[in-house]
Length: 522
Image (cartoon, rainbow, N blue to C red; front, side, top):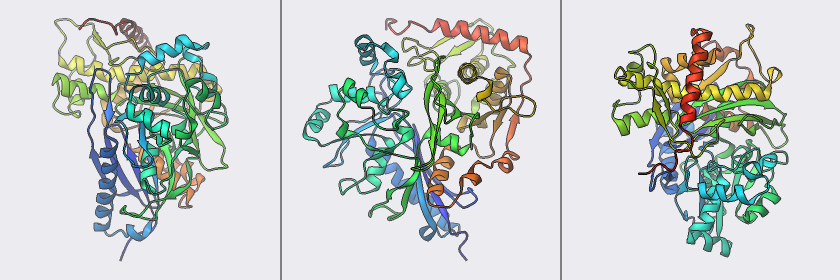
């Protein structure tokens, strides 16, 4: 006899891989499949993906995950009520409305080719780097989609031609996937959600609409932009030709916003996701807080057309897990990412070695695109275990820098604390399986770190949004996380305050050494 017959699917399209996970009504995964895809680096600082390869990875993951669940006795074909989508944010695609062909590779969020455009705008615009901050909550930076779109409009002939003909469509990866899932050239829906739109620099945070003055200033034609929708509503239905035709697409969030929802973060609660980069968000409820300490003002989520909008403060760190990949792939110090925990655990400190992974500059709270990576404090005593530990510490120091800024911006009233008066940081993402990393994080923060039993909360957040829109779950069920937290693991700090202070001071010295290094001679 077939088991439970109400399922929600979740497409989790990340920076290096795509997954499709099927959840039952208890939010338990009953089938999944993951595929890695190619990352292209044609020049220093340039990072691209092939949009077609991403699309094919989604097709494969959906098909394989359904096969696995069906083989285990789940009647997914009849029980799949909806799917949600979560995606790497800011990554930019422009494609042809008439042919469906991408007119250039997707320019990835960490790509820094737009540095010269940023400098130009900072000089031309009266507000400099913060010219658009009041409308969109974001500084002018290589990070955001608008700058990547400007580069495409200025440098890629097929994009220029398609815009002139009215044949160009712009979007982040969510838009590209939804357009293709709902029919593509055959009346595919050109939409994005409020969280992804909030990362373009083009959406007004208060009106949740494209900001006319920003579009005019940047000379971006409005007709190439997608329609903005909420995070939890029936957007459209999967078209014929896919393995799940007719299934509603009813949830869509950028990956970090999905992780917030997957962690059930209410107002005053924060989460940190450790992936290629690290992303820390604090839910500020319906309050839009403009940061004075180098953070971004963004959305948490809007769970329905008429639902209230939850906002957030965010600190984005460009290089976190990517530094471990660098140790593995470029230096050969480890053979697999999982080896770093054992290697780092062979020493009880970094031996005075500090590593700042400013490979393409530093994001929050520093915002220095002239920064480059440094490894300092090396002596004859230094060995590869010290370097491995310094890499783990670099991730944790960066998270602490962001959380310190959040504390200053939000104040005590903006943060929920436990019965002991401690602020809890919820963590998720692949790197959090590393217990050494999590203990270092708690020690450097001086606050507990809470890891959920299921660390892959991003896909779960997209599933929650989709399920909410079609009535599989209620908001109360999603945010009542008391039972779930009983299964979580808590890491309490053991480092004394004096040593913590000294280590932070040393970290700041290392960060300062990274500045103004972008023009070092080859």
